[in-house]
Length: 341
Picture 1 (tube, helix red, strand yellow):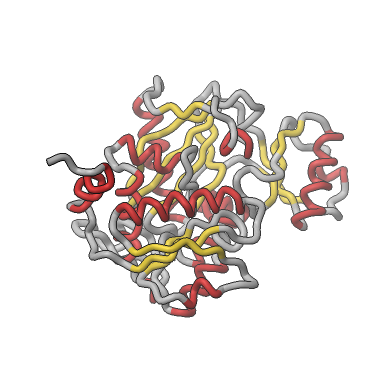
Picture 2 (cartoon, helix red, strand yellow):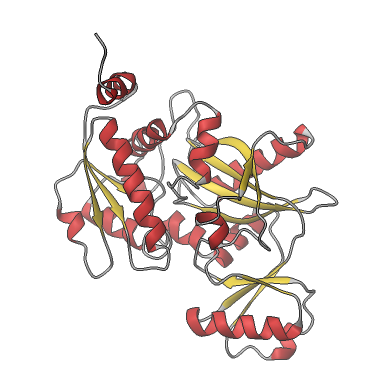
């Protein structure tokens, strides 16, 4: 007898769930400029967990409205990008309440979200990242005059390339710093790396395949990330295997140095002439939309979107929240899969 499509889908996924059906609250929305993307991510996660048989609801949450955390739930899946979702504030509140949630803890989230703190950690560990300086509204113009142009100006703690620009003249540099500093308090000015952009997803302490991003825009900005249909995401790359393997290994190292757990995505720029890689940032809550790169990379190793969401729950539930760190996965030594914050 033929099964209905919904029944076939349920049967196909029934044997893959590692835990009994859970009451899950997906946290999405939030107060920042990435709210719309977060809502899309939340809707996608909600649909996936429903297909897997979990009892699931998606809830908006902001610092002014934490009522979603009052719901009776076994697990909170954070699909909140940028402010409040990735900066550790929400994770700290979940910890305070003793609630189980997805991904990295509060300390690692704060560390990764603040690009300056992250760069300092990476530099101390010998992981390459572009040279930089931090400027604010009081920074005298002469302090910027010695910078090699072009350069990249961006907020110190934001995501999705919001308010990020490439500047090519001293006048553009001064204007960009003034604009970002006025909105965020200070601006990160970073050496521009000309070459391919790569990204590496991390799942369970292991690197997923390297993805190269190609866009017709000047760089991989908000429109290229979430709106454009002609942005290319390439996995079958014609580069030396040693270069690919090095970036994967360094991505795992960056994930661990910042204390991340369960999953993340590490973004890179490569020098076009030398193929020397430079970390741009580590994202503790990468997107879960149809444009998002962590799901694309997971699919390359046979982990579809539904299974990715389930694995994130499974890996998160074995983490030791009390110590804000992670227990080793089966077969790994202590401190192996996920470093402690």
